[in-house]
Length: 279
Image (cartoon, rainbow, N blue to C red; front, side):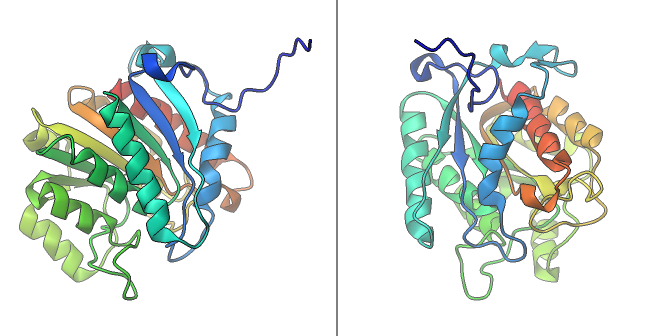
């Protein structure tokens, strides 16, 4: 019998027992509606491998990954070219996670994967909020005639939770009417305390990695200059530790646009820190 050791393709420090875990990490390698640079479908696998280059301990949260008690379920397999069936697969699997009394942590993939997650969660929680980190508003009704688009995902999510339950951080690009939507509904946050309207509610946190500056995160589908540093993003996560986070995702890494691997390493640490805030 072979003795190994063998390379583990699951996330570092995950709990191999689904039944005993609190959080389920779910790979969502879908990028069927990307409007600029595709390739985020390759992110979940690359992120898993890169996780082994991280320490298990977060000094910011004074916790180790084992304290979070998460299970890595692996990647869903999607039928290429069939957006609706792919979204339905996400929704069905996320529904099962919540039916089992657990929380989801999605790894995209493009940002559209958030919509079926929110649809699934809404069957279990009727009044919850969304905290959205992104460079882009994602508040269009449609993009090039298609409602199921990563450029429209947050608008459609807001219809499920209500605009009053949406808060957006890091936004610096979008159409004029999208910025008017943010002003009308007071969704854009400039400081930590702007999130406090959602304190006491259950919240879902969605992070588009292009919220970070392109100097830090060039490996993304729609890079946008003028973004946060990693330390600034981590500060928001630290503030979120006092919120009731019922689910999260991290999306839009396109690893092949950064041959150095630095973007993948950054994405992996973003996931570690958000897991700490969530757990």
